Amino acid sequence: MKISAVEKEYHNPVLLEECLEHLNLKAGGTYVDVTFGGGGHSGKILEKLHEGRLLAFDKDADAHRNLIKDPRLELIRSDFRFIEAELGKREIKAVDGILADLGISSHHVDAPERGFSFRFDAPLDMRMDQSQEVSAATLLNQAEEADIAKWLWQWGEVKASRRIARELVRRRALKPLETTFELVEATEACTPQKLRKKVLAQVFQAIRIEVNSEMDGLRELLTGGLKLLAPGGRFVIMSYHSLEDRMVKNFFRFGNLNYEDRRDFYGNQISPLKLITRKAIVPSEQEILANPRARSARLRVAERHT
Ligand SMILES: C[S@@+](CC[C@H](N)C(=O)[O-])C[C@H]1O[C@@H](n2cnc3c(N)ncnc32)[C@H](O)[C@@H]1O
Image 1 (cartoon, protein in one colour):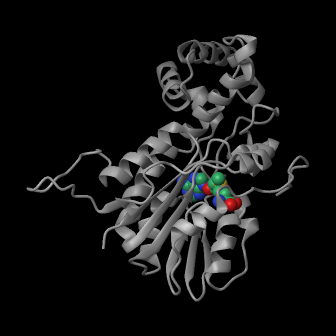
Image 2 (tube, protein in one colour):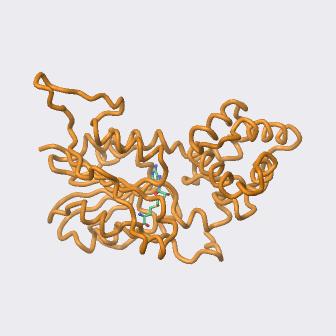
Image 3 (cartoon, protein in one colour):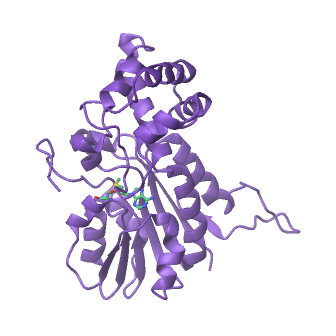
């Protein structure tokens, strides 16, 4: 595939040292990087991992161009929600650490043709997995107005969610929505100029999350990954928006997705996970200065009980 002219580098890894330190690499261990991207974190893991094994996932074909040739690494083109099945196929029943650096890469926003950015006029795509049938255009042309409003509200916290959904439905009745700039124009028609950038970022985030089923994927990664973690094995998860971070935080705290505080007869919490980070680790000002896209990263770590 053509590499976009605006692209400087595929992705600049965030909180690299902190992720590595918290993975607590053991010689001979098996680790999973479920969001390979530009391979920044995987490369560092391989550098420090002697005799171990690294499985990596990325559902985006572009990320597979960054494959690091190393016999200890296998890069799997699959959604990480299938972690249990994919590792099962390889007869791997337990792993020592799972790293997730959620969301999209810089490549996604810098490559105009992928449709993730409101800065470029491009097809309304936003699929991380190019083989997926449903794109942003499919969703926005076919979904009920109420569903579009719900996504904008839930995934983007867009205040004018209902007005924007109504505007999109009005416009698509005249002509099917095809481009990112059509989504930009519909949003702008409902947004004061001074809020333009903020609301566009929220709208694009919301639609992208829905197109890629990001919240369902995270849910399945957490439950599937927990089953795979060996005693002492770690979850190291970095998220970039509050909904994901809240899910990770509560799952790590309670060890289940219902966020039930299960206690034994004596009142001791029963959870398969122990919190390693009570508060999320965030990038330093220096890192944010060098890489502004790191700004919203929140890293949380939990360990499977022995
Ligand atoms: C933030 S980037 C990771 C960057 C990487 N840590 C690095 O240092 O280059 C997230 C990557 O995960 C991939 N991804 C996101 N959600 C995924 C999912 N559910 N299944 C598989 N890959 C996913 C995206 O395609 C993207 O390449």
